Amino acid sequence: MTTKKLTKRDLYNMLFVVVAESDAPDSDKELLCDFVNHELHLLEKKSKAHKVPTKTQIENQFVKTEILDAIAGGFTRAGEIAARCDISVQKASALLRQLVLSGDVERVEDGKVTYFMLKE
Image (cartoon, rainbow, N blue to C red):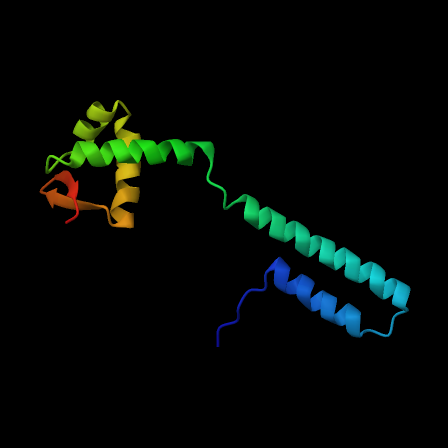
């Protein structure tokens, strides 16, 4: 039997139910319920903040377009792509990995050399 680890959101929701059903005076219930709702609101706000792409992620979208244009000729190595796009080989490799995971690019290994090509 596997048990799911409870998140903060789960615990605050449980706390809200316990407080709402308790025999405490209404003023105490209202105070605690307001506190729990505020904490849930902060969690929601925090989770939405992480869904906005960062400045670097936005810039990398343009670089990925350049990489796709550079690969259009056929089999290409990461070093060649880096030279054509004027970026480091490490950055080219990282962005190529993301493009492979998204299904836009295919990775082909020939011995110790790795080539990339557009997926058909």
